[in-house]
Length: 201
Image 1 (spheres, helix red, strand yellow):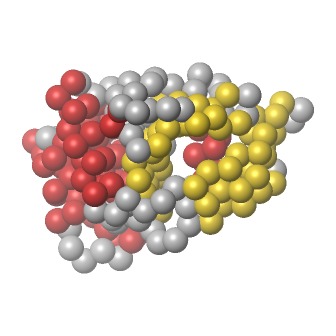
Image 2: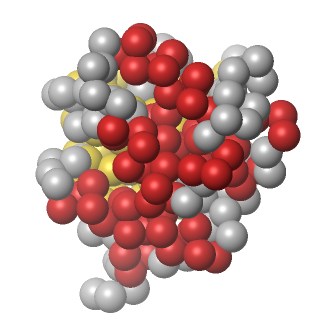
């Protein structure tokens, strides 16, 4: 993914002031920043949900986006969500969703509806739906929100597998935990991305 000179404003308030970002294949990257710094706005622009004021975003291959707020239908069970997305993407093999569900350990809820699930399990479903079509570029907004410690660690194992399979993974968070797991890290402040030296460097 290549991002060049990205600007965005809400009325007179400038949120993004010239974002430049390169996300190479096989990279696990992160952006941290205070609440309200523009992280979610940036991701919404990167995934094409929001048009920027100016600048360009280009990427190759399929794109996956996991928003901070879960976008689920309480009329469908987890398994029905999978079938809906598989049909939407034209996927013939249902094993991808089953594999991720096994990694995140929520298969026991496959026939339950989201309204009966905990916030962490809803987030597991939210993440799985972003991955179901095996995207080349994955954009994750606070993806481990509500996870218990074991699931949090499983998430990082999954992220590392994706990176090792040549995927580009960008994780956005207001917390700077586990930055040593990342290949690249930026801090978003005053509408600009600032490179941060990783804890392992």
